[in-house]
Length: 205
Image (cartoon, rainbow, N blue to C red; front, side, top):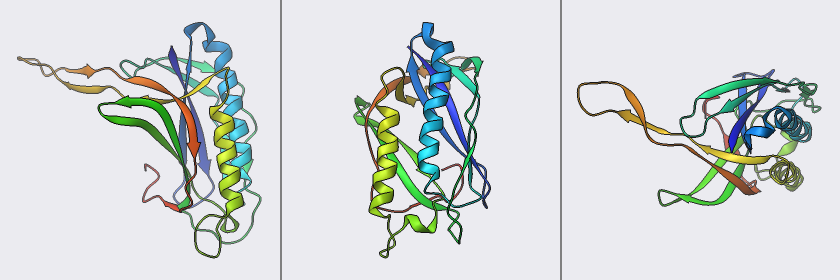
């Protein structure tokens, strides 16, 4: 299996840009066709979640798909695709730029004594995404969870968590940095959106 990396960018708000990164496991023979499938799948995901963002917030799937060697984390190729049209939030009014929701991606795998998992932040959300208690509306949770599970349930490509390789110095006189533990990919088996507000201190979170 190889990994295809697709990025979804967020612009149009204070603190922008933001980036969601998705990895998909495919066989090497699938790369060209699968790249377009992955971009389309992320575009469908963006279309659903954009309905819960504020007007002016713009989500765009990047057309360049990176082919990643999971063992060393290096990009071996870039595949051009046709990206879907960017989508924007429909809800006008005030909103908090650093707050939103988080999707927890779970796998059935364990590495180094811990269950492998990942997160995707959906930030910022429109004010209408929150309830009177200051947490997420039940309709927001349902919609985001549905979008996440639709993405991860695809059989043609496998939404995966990419565990980056661990690098370190070689022994002896050389200062060369090498991979001392290869990376890995793990298929996402379930997704959940907790009923709490996620706050980003920076767009790198």
